[in-house]
Length: 466
Image 1: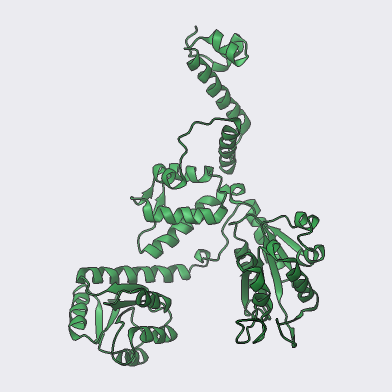
Image 2: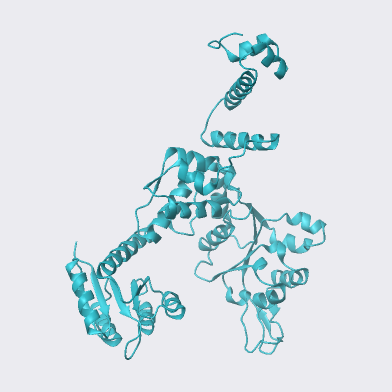
């Protein structure tokens, strides 16, 4: 395999020399340039290198201008920005422009060489993942019956020009479903535009959806094109539709019915061809009954309904999801992917996941960052998920634990679960009573409301009689 090509761009000759020399000694093929123009000429003549270091402040085009031009010509080129000015504006500007890393001057040469190795490795891993369709960040994952049913429904609905209402708890991946519907549809080449209606203040939501003309309200200095116009010919995903104010529901209904609207403060009738995909975690029928959501709008949106199962209903998908998230974290951290031990995996599958897939992703990222070893242990998992040291104090707590255990066993395909659970329940209860009475069976049976023979039979042989 040929050595990676690394370019160094810096007007300071001494920096160019020592950094280029250190990188060459590390085995890289290095070229050095004293200004942005020379680097861009070389890019046009020889193609992009594998990695580029650039200073921020240079005569002519500075490093941030060079970064902008590089990203226009070679979007996948990783760039490390170097500067003695580590203020917020410099670092934020570098990352906003697409820099992979920021190296503060003066720097240790060993650190710079190590940074080059990490950046090159991370970029190579990202290319490998990008070439693997199932590893894409917006790919739905799962092979449980609920997910296979969902995949089949997406495949059928993608081709149909129908409005779709996606329901499911927060964090289940409703936007991923919407993107899949768009990606597999005849509209795939046109825009996919997403808007969380709950995240926009109600007084701004109308303008965000339909746009406004200059002077329509205080601060509206120029025309603004709304999300409907942006999505023309494509798909518009409206998340948390249940939070939309009633007056806007009326305007949305007209667009769905007629495909036309006016911008705020405008007189020009705008016509659009948009497939609307809506999502909510709320019960819209209840909101309709409470007068908070229009029944006719619900009928327009709810031509076809897709329900996303919560993660606790598809626990068998947890290992596959966790593996994908740990692999993504490894790429970001430029480190080998961590593995889950069997006890850690059992702990993951037994968890109830109130935050669903989003919570699992966050947990995996924390484990990738915090777990000390290459293999994640049960103790690592307990530390991240949190372990209660308080003994169960009421029926609700132990029933919840029993429910979690049962769901995990069912996900593993266990048979005869009732008999197994009953045996475990009896033994735990009887042994607790015997411990309480100091092993006195007659007293233990009385405290449990059982006959002594029943207690003896349930315990089976091997216990000393008393």
